[in-house]
Length: 85
Image (cartoon, rainbow, N blue to C red):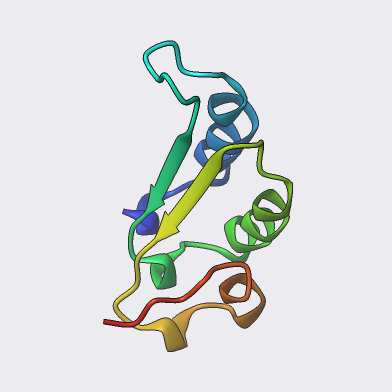
């Protein structure tokens, strides 16, 4: 859950984990899922995500879920393609 996502975990995910090509993937695609994006714990994490989403490695997809898109920072929300269902 994103409510427990710390800035250190966020940095590790975007700066280290996503930079490594998985050995078990034939295509090399990487996917990050962030649940409940509206529940991010701090503005520090939000600010970091805004920058990290602009500098994704090739073949990387970030999927974020939300129960309330109105609760998400507008600048952060603009970095996603929104599908309402």
